[in-house]
Image (cartoon, rainbow, N blue to C red):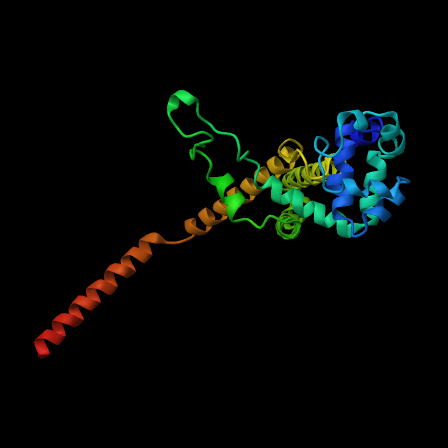
Length: 262
């Protein structure tokens, strides 16, 4: 993915170029006119801020030579990427928008049943959707949460990585490398999605980020469950059972003695 981004032709389709500016750079800029000037584009195009490709201008104008020369030809993935790096506040805002969209990856407008099933239009099944429901409704949909999540992940697994190197345990070492690879792929795709399409078409562009987040989360959950199992194995359940029975017997004897005294 990293190699393809730098090797691909330095251009975008008109649809992607338009949205990368109007639904990204201009939408998050405090001064859209100034942002356009950094791309050597006429500041008057700031009127397009927040619009989509299909609603802003007539198709004839959008496909005109003038529009191609004065607007589309000046937009490139590299230029947009450099702009965001120079304006981290805007990048962070776009990352927040993208993370929130990736946590709502299930299309709300798309139903799961045929008309013959008799369900209302747009009805969705609740089977096998617990994780999607939790992500959409309970996880903080912002990049700050992802930073905390990454910090916990790295903090936990770097210890196993160090231990794996000392003990020459390839399993612990490769587990950390694998998780960091997944993490990098997810974050990179998140960044590329912002550069190439702004906040549009998030269901398609952010699938990889959502997938890597889910995979890493389930690996960590599995590790936590395994740790709990190891702790439970250390417990002498027979001794606890015997101690519980002895306490009950002692309570019974005490009640009988109090009865005799009365």
